[in-house]
Image 1 (cartoon, rainbow, N blue to C red):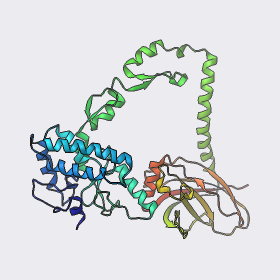
Image 2 (cartoon, helix red, strand yellow):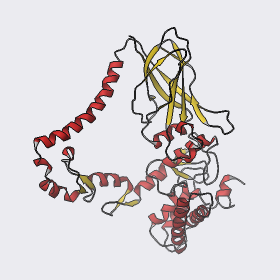
Image 3 (cartoon, one colour):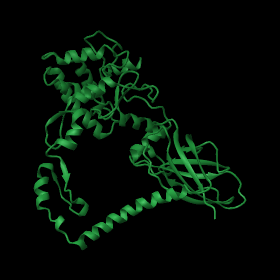
Length: 400
């Protein structure tokens, strides 16, 4: 039985225009096998009083997710609630079109409407960008081939493609503002919440001198007129300014250090590619290593590991990477170096610059594992989901 037949409960992969297999309606306008499904799903959903077969199929799909004992409890509860709502709307043939489209266009992993990019497997099942990257990262950590949670077909960045039709459709669906509870198209909601909503949470303009007030935007003018912080004495303001200067000095110290290193006589940099490997232990662990490369007339290797090689990093929500630099050449005298890793020229991962120092000798030729300063676990998942990790290494030789 093919993956499409399994997802459709045993039915044919491509039926007549009035019937859409389960899950195929999720790939609006993208999969070749599901090209006829979206038009039929949207056409029947718009007809009042007629049970929407695409909605019924999606409801059955959600009910299966709700009954899956391996699914997380929160996902089972969400799936059960969504399945009940979808089944009721589809069976009665009532309700708004956008409410019935929710179960058709939602992500098959988190069961929520995508907020940004939408990816689809070869059978047309939809995944939001965050869930797609997380599936690829989990598969890398478990040394498995990533698969679609619906039809179990293989997924990867080369096999899956974005579904622009679904992205545009979702952007036009109404969504409720979390502050004023008004309905807006999703494409306009972010701008409304940041710039236009009168109930959005804002801060006093005197927050830089210590005002802690947070409140709705329509009360901001009244608060600022009565705020006591502009009348503070000079001594009180000096204490606040000292704290601000201290934070600013830390930032300037980093950049001054980088500018100072750039004036050194011997500077080298290179693009490095971390490739994934597994240890030879009974329970294998993922690690990364680069091919040997030459910088400053010496041969080097970089290694990296996930969550400091904990036993099951795939079970942890918080993920980090750490790395070490190894000198493979023999040296006649101690080699004191400063080094830092930055993102490569073609990657969009966010890395904060941190300078590390070490004195390399023949007896001590490798640094301790130091944190790769990525911003959060989301950025770490981006790196793990990639086939290789591409970064740029800078080395500065300190001469006395």
